[in-house]
Structure formats: structure tokens, C-alpha cells
Image (tube, rainbow, N blue to C red; front, side, top):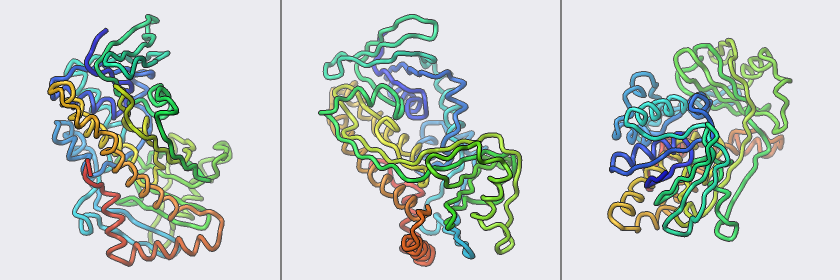
Length: 391
């Protein structure tokens, strides 16, 4: 097989990159270890920054988002006996949208399928080769058991933190930074209407809680738990009871409505950044290059920002023989990556209980400052609603 850009990974980053490249007449093949059904069913992020929505609109992918998504002006910050609303539109002139990553993936998949995109789902033994030459290639075993070689001008690694792309960069050619947090999230999906009009981020001495949503009839909620938490120790009633305590059920007339839980999982909390995001003819995007804790809702949006930079860089490189943007890709993308990594760390450390009474008082002081100071609230709003792509 032969193509211009071999894209490893059929998540939002890989699919959006193929879509953006196709707008410039650049051919690609998308390779994915999982089946399409699995990829489109994965429960992931649900908050889209304003810049992400603007990009999807610009390339014809925003119709269903605007029909079925929910635009939010801000969030609530809550701690015992206090609840404050931060209005992002008032503070920073931008909103966010609640629209699940599963839905973004479906929209992208349907658009690429309609355009005749070539996919290879269900592959195994994927490996990249000759990355420092101008003739890199990918090998894999197809779903029907055939060994395949895919030659390309460029390889885009959009295959997440456990895919082959990140591991193909030699240790001597990269630097990594990592932070593992001493807690995880117990996340649930529930078939019940949200008990709030906008997300609630709650600090509590027993641990952080978050009330999010996926639609008018499906709620997404999280509890801070220990990293080694046994999910079997959390029956549904215990989860709802703990959410009610941490989210402030009964305070100021607010009530949490429980419902049938349809999905339950424990999510680790870590940050990871790898530099550079390019090695020869291999370019990394999304989780293949960086991971952030979900507190700041940045993972999917960072992946979108990466490929929004990568697509024009590859276009100039392949169509105009101009490598300037490709050479600058890693440095340009990493400025935003580190800004969002810091914001995610800041939100995480401000809201999660660590068991230290001194730290708890510092967290409460910081929350009061954010809620009571326009400057503090604006800083959170600007970062949460999304900084410009290519900042």
C-alpha cells in the first residue's frame, strides 16, 4: 500500500487530521488496532472549548453538535456551605459545549466514510520504520490476517499513550516529564436527567466530586478515590450517597437526583509530556505526546489543537516543499500543551483532598479568591473556555 500520510489511530485526533488533510487534497490511510464499533463507543471527554467548536464548524462538522450538544456559559464551584457560579461569557467572552467525545468520533467517522477515506480497523502488530529517511513506512497485520506494508511520505502518530508511535522515538532523542497524582476518579454514567444546568466542581474534605452530563437524559459524575480503589467496593447506593454529601445535596434547596448507573470505572490521574513531538518523518499528536488529568477538560481539546497545527504544516511540506511549519510544529504545539498542563495541575491540586489540614485551608483560600475576585475568576474562565490554537 502507498499513501501520502499514514495516520496511526482512529480516535478524534487521527480522524480530524485525515479530514483536514483531505480538504487540502492530501491522501491518507487511517490504521486502528480496535474495531470501529469499539472506538465509537469509548467513554471519554465531554467538554469542547470554544476554539474546538469553531474549528469543527469551519470544516463542516458542527451541525449535529449544535443540534444535540448543550452550550454552557460557565461552571459552578462548590465547597461546604458555599456555591458560586463563574460565567465564562461574561468573564472571557467564550463559552464551552457539552458534547461527548464518542459523538465527535461518530461525526468524524461518518464524514470520512462519506468522503471515501481508507481505513484499516482491527489491525495488530503495528510498527513504524525508517523514520529518519524520506521514505518511512508502517507494517501491520490486517484484521483478516494478512501482513501489510504501508509506505508514506509522513507518519502521524495519533495512537494514544500506549500505541507504537511514542515508543518508536529513541530515548536519546526525547525528554519526558511526568506527574502521577495520589488519587483517581471513580466515574459513572447514569440514565437520569442532570441535577444541574452546568457542571459542578466540588471541593470537600472527603474528596473531590464533579457533576457533569452527556445529554438531557444522561448524567456523568465523578468521585475522588484512592489510586488502588476496588470498584467492587462501590455499589450504586454508596456512590449516590457519597456524591450527595460531596456535591451538597440539601444545601440552599439544591438536590441530587439518583438514577440507574449504566457504566462505572476508575480513572488514573497523571500528567505526561514528551518533547519533541516530532522525530524525523514521525509527528505525534494528542495522547501520543501528552496526557493531562481530566480536571481541566483539556485532553480532547489539546488533541484538536495539535492536528489543527499539524495539518497546515504537512500541507506546506508535501505540497509546497516548505518545511518551516513542520520544523516549528513541536515548539508551537508545546506552548499550548504546557499551558494546559499547568491549568490542569492547578485545577487538580486546588480541588482534590490530600489529607493535610494545612493544605485544605490553602485550597479553601484559593477557592474563595477565584470565586470572589474578577481577576481570579477570569483566569480560570480564559483557560477553561480555551486559549487560541497556536497561542
